[in-house]
Figure: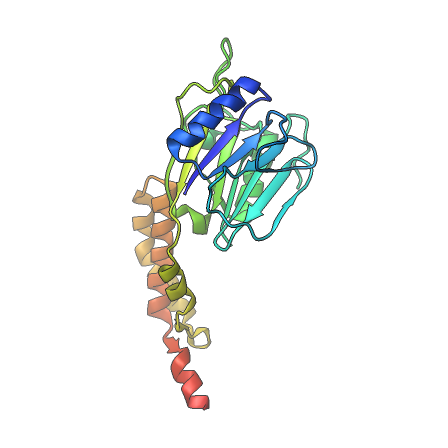
Length: 263
């Protein structure tokens, strides 16, 4: 599934050019900040008219819940949630599988800026509390002539989604906006894989956990984690390390055997 993140800066030209980009790149969902106001298109808009999720015609993304607030809108299907947002520079930031994309007007060293200030630290703190990983790092998205390039457009994903993210790139195509757009490629689970995952009959018996063995095993294997250079491989290596620790420190139980014993 190809997802396009875009800040059209309320430009009609950018809006028209985006139509062609959606067709050329096979985009199935567009997360837009500062959209050009136009009512005919199939989209879900936030209350303030600054964030939108657009599902091009023919998209097979089946929406279950959906909702919006001031500067934020989301849609959900059976596998994950997508959220589009727009925070103005004056906004106060306090406050399943999740994708969040928007123009946060924040600068942080984590996504390529030279410095991180108090506002940006609060964005990072929010991401850390929610277990979100920044997908675009090191490539500027705002490139207005005469200004230093910055990266206010940030896509984030929950840790469980990162392993399904095959590619995240800033597009160099001309789009009529002073923001470069971002595409994400999310690997969708097949129905068979999803059914097999949901039918899993084994789990660890936490009543027989040996905490000392768990900590020792993780400590023995953690050195391999830090050799990974990308968020995706880092998350994968961390989960593998934890799994090794769980396997070593507690037995698994078979729910089918347990159920048969009861009957």
